Length: 114
Length: 110
Image 1 (cartoon, helix red, strand yellow):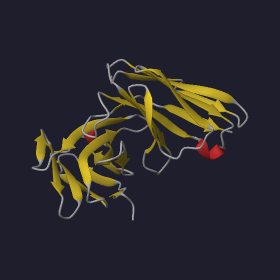
Image 2 (cartoon, rainbow over the protein chains, first blue to last red; image 1 turned 30 degrees about the vertical axis):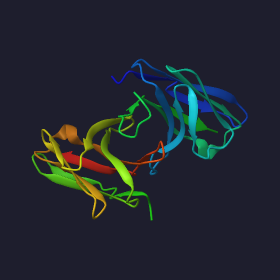
Image 3 (cartoon, chains in turn yellow, purple; image 1 turned 90 degrees about the vertical axis):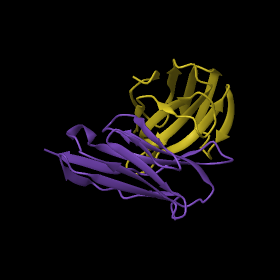
Image 4 (cartoon, rainbow over the protein chains, first blue to last red; image 1 turned 90 degrees about the horizontal axis):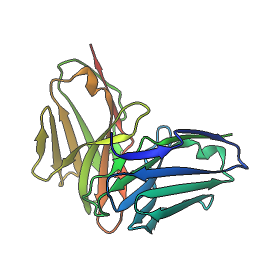
């Protein structure tokens, strides 16, 4: 296993709900990432945190709100989502934020928005 | 033009065959290159980094051609367990981004 865990693994929510995705890494890494993977599309980087500071926000709508309380935990808060937001949301971590660092992925949260 | 392009496949090959995938990238300033493997309904996992001089790991060989802006992955003696989607990843200096291709699906048939 990669040492990156995500909960919940599956989530169904209505467009008016508020929910949060949780990611935890047990690897002692300093950088954490959120990605979105939709069917037949490449993984899309959403957010990058390095040493708990957000360093990249890849033009993500404000209905997605990340939170990184410490270097081991990363949250993605969801509110008033749209059906097109249904996708697999993957968390990843790396030792540092250098481009040469390997990113290790969690198993993902499969989200369905009704 | 997409930043990273891959033939989606599927590539259907018999066990024991040799198969190769290419991945082209559009940004000549791209810095680092990786191949990840993603099994159905699972997370991507690093298969190998791609070095300028080419590198090999068992049955897998990765090559980088900067002049033509592509990387390749060669799998020799294919196993049933090699069936997966292979994702090409490119990074560019000045950003934190891993840019993923859509992946090439491989099916190794008994």
